[in-house]
Length: 500
Image (cartoon, rainbow, N blue to C red; front, side, top):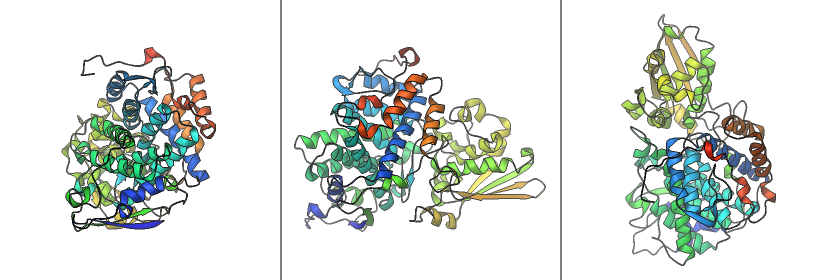
């Protein structure tokens, strides 16, 4: 790996493009490096993971609306939509929009946390859609996804967006563009321009994940993927982009991030070096923000130790800066304590999540978020007794550069009415790659089977699992096999008229 220093240059200094971060990213996207065997297998795991949560969300409001929009953009030789008959094809950017929303809706797929946040699995829907429309092979798709993960993970390691309240999809646009570039075997110049355009068009604020969180949280990554596809299309036609997008005097860094005196250090593999960043990412066992995963495991264990939950006086959670300020009481969001809050808000409230997991000794992607569940008096009592605190030791562990030592956990102290304190701590989720029972292929398959139960028939379930695990051998034009069809009468509709 090489650590690239990224800073702002005044316009009078003409920074050669070969010294720009976007060019360095484009170089690794076009280097045709040897694929890492474990990375290839992990791509297959994540396609299964994405499909699991997408099918489970097919009849949720935002997914229905995104599908209705995509259905208005049919194309003879286009891409498929989750749930819809394979014979029907649609413009790839609209397929990416709909499928990306379905993947993101339940907040239940993979994650990578470092200087910033990300859900690298958001790269997969736009890449599959483009691959289907362009009749690419399974190996082409694998290469593209591996590049996309590599780019996003390393941008997340090097550049913090959250500090300036910029949404993390600003790292997704460039990673999708780079991944498509690899998959389509585009040259370095074309990928370079696409990365810059994709970044320029995907800057938005974190209000989408603050306060009363709406369905836009599900749409945002899909929107970034769609914009990245359009960016690649434009540059393939010979168009350019704002440049240098990272280092320029009025660039993203200069005007939106750390400013003209900024210095970022972004790691990237050497040209020709195998890309393995996907192996540093991790999926979710529970449908909730990733930093709550270890705390759900903790709550399940503490339930066995607290004999009478009515005797709880207060609960203190000592954790990292990010956990405290994003999903904890440090966010200062009253909505995080509101039983009438949206599902999207509740899955970003560690106070709510911990209370429910402690009471139920479990977590369910639907039952744990129902309105009646949130309004349960005993839950509200526990919920409002919880306070989070930043502990610099946990913040340091959160940012540890060694993946084996990186921690997304917390220490919990439950104080009972009689003064007794019950303590428990955990560094990372049980399902984390370095947790007590890391997810393997069978865990991904089980997640798929459980989440699609009563939605898919056994034949369609087995067909998809067989084809996706045979991805390396799928030939040009066979990637439609990665789509999953359900009976038409099982897909809900939104018949409200829009523009399309």
